[in-house]
Picture: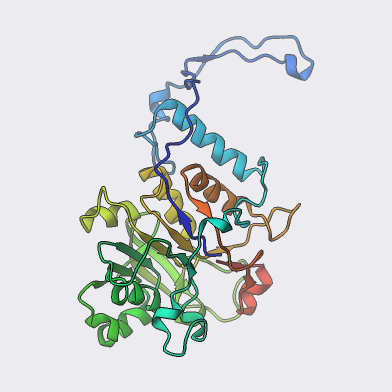
Length: 335
């Protein structure tokens, strides 16, 4: 599902409840029908484990009340404790965009909507005009289909940065037409929730993906150790720290979860005015089926609290992967 959303710089809602300090614990069994109090027991000093960021980053840039609110958003979303169980998939702000476009009218020689999968991410072009310039675009995941970034570079004169570590992309790009554009910059690494080398697996259409088979495949798949960086690291290295990305496209075959989770934890609200992305997910809320996903809802609900409002999606539940092994496992793709 592509989410095309306009960003306002809103802080997470403040609450006036400080986090409790950790010292000693007095437990009571009254809630269980027991009256005996458990004696005070010393606990391990907080400094020995609360500062461990091995697997969970501490959002040090937030106040304690903001951190508590962020935790509330995460827990309520992940457990389905929401007033709107469809927040991740149901665009309630359709009327906010008057000029919805998949860019095919600018890049498809045959005309709008006649070029197929090359133009499959919708964005809002309100207040945009050809040749305007002074715009920054990040395009994560291009394979051999650079149409999104190419139109943004050719037609709108944006500074475009495209990223993909796939072997098929590295072989194709040097001789491609888009490589000749002075304002189109290709980077041979991917975006992820960490910096370094990660193992990605052979996926549909020559792509690579973090998604692994739930069941052992009948034929072993190739895997690749490829370089990746977080969104924060990329922006810092490219000199874009402190800037807003005008268009952020994320189509990274399953890595979108770790990418967005890391960005929201480390950067706060996403530094982007619009985001269009494709989800690859297995998780369904058993009450609502494919129309609701706790893993998707968690991220979308936090972005919603940051001011990003969804106004388009490809379909309610997306489409099953054409690969039999993924289809059998229930993997859905949604824009």
